[in-house]
Length: 175
Image 1 (tube, helix red, strand yellow):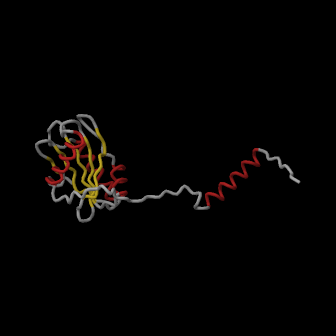
Image 2 (cartoon, helix red, strand yellow):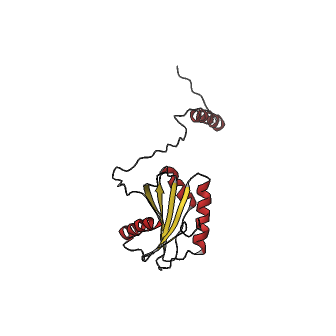
Image 3 (tube, helix red, strand yellow):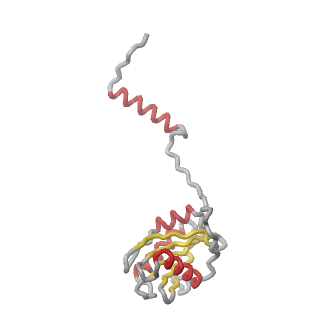
């Protein structure tokens, strides 16, 4: 014999809440986030960064390969390094216009943590060919350095690249 039970909306809500609380308490149902690190099997070891000139050469090559030219538009990059200054990866942070692009401290830190980097080099190009850092370049560098410092990740340099040369915040003592 089957008996029918009539539940009010309040009774039903209480039952669902009790079941949900039980389910959330059980790890199988919790919104668990899993983070894993997998190096792409096609990753080509591109060596170490020895000095700012070396970093600017690598960045110029990336700009030429990815965008066809250093002078096309402003692009911000980050290079991730391990303790031995070996490059473990690089990423395009943003693609801007001719006169600017955004470097997000959050995005740099997120990617550095995900790649297990202990050091980063941020870089961008100046399509105008002007090697002098702008006031926003200087302020952004300070912000990135402070943000990464709290995570024990070193900002090793901020390099501005043009077709003719580069400007290194580290070489100029502005880091």
